[in-house]
Length: 439
Image (cartoon, rainbow, N blue to C red; front, side, top):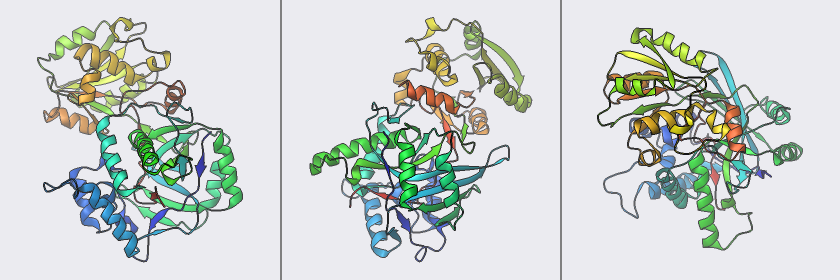
């Protein structure tokens, strides 16, 4: 049973910060050093100073990016730049955006405190494996600041749209927060404080599992932080602020959600030969060749074929051509796998890519993935092409997007996809509402 609660969020005080556009930031894991500097320069209260403070060569155990973030948080609260709302609410949060094709869409959901549950509880369901590095970073930040600065993005299934109807009613009022980001997206927030509406939302959500869409590292970090705080305080009743985590909850049955592919860049392959590789995989994949000037047609064909078969695009710095790789019907790939695949994992493009093309034929397995020595990820196809053209990568594998029903089925079966199997869009803005993890 999912336990969700309204909460007294910490928000920017518009009397102290007149233009809220200047103090917001994207999620920490997509902030480059260049963007970090731009955010620092935008405003002295920009949330990047909390979420991703700068590192310096002079950092020590007692003066570092985490202690500085905590100092900023305390100073901003004391100065009144950040204030705590007087009563607990659910924060309705709508994101208006355009798809790459130019279609206008709205992602609809709400911010809530969600009771932390173990990952094998069947209440909060992950779909991806995690790495230790990001979790260690987020844990140090939580231990210093005792707050959630950005929400975990989770999905639930509610085809009847009872909750969405209440969210739409709340969205008819003047928003508490209304900001626009540099990508042209509009972010609007309202509050639901009516006791009857809160109870209805809690009742509808109680019987539904929550599927983590974005924020696996943060959720696992929140579990570790909770356990540490329980040991420190001796409080294990499950009702403390550290027993909860900030989440954005959105209905996977609503058309406002978009999932984009995450493409793979491969480098540091010794003695790689493109033609030999193509010859090795020819028994399993149909290989169609496009010239680079046919790039648009190649991408359209990748998407079209991907609706009925496992299909991947391949671009190499050793060739001016683009290759469409389509798994042949009945291809006997099972002997190539390091371990048998369940039917649900076998249905995923990303699993076939990692298990067959990367691990079996290129030798990039779990050890190499954990070391992050051969594989990188990019969201935009043009970035993938540029990386290869600039000799910043040897190969680019272009993907089709994982479907939301595949995420649901994998999670319900207790399986895990490879890292970066999904790219949910739009990305939630950091800085709209913060959640305190201690009184």
